Image (cartoon, rainbow, N blue to C red; front, side, top):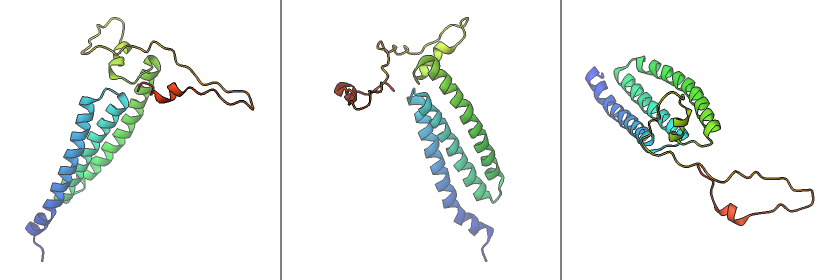
Length: 155
């Protein structure tokens, strides 16, 4: 017959593995938040941090034999889904106003009466206006620009 001490000793490696995976996910998300300036990458890094916490909660819940951590993870996932919708609206609004997804571009979205605090210079706007493709008439080959195919647009 298995005693509670033997059950806890058998569940300990599973707990350790779950905590290690959760810590790795959280650390990767933290590195992504601190090192990147692209709003979408920052948002995905925040989601990765939430998933790391969720894995740790499920591991602790499994180790203690109750469902409290797993129920909390369901609430975390539902809040993360709502946060994703709100963040998507913010990202789209920032992109339509500034034309870029750089986090420093959010400085221009503040109110007029507040001073701008910039830790780094905001990247300069592109001097050239965007060119949009045009449809050619039927039976004609479209014009191709080899130089434009070799260069990448800004991200």
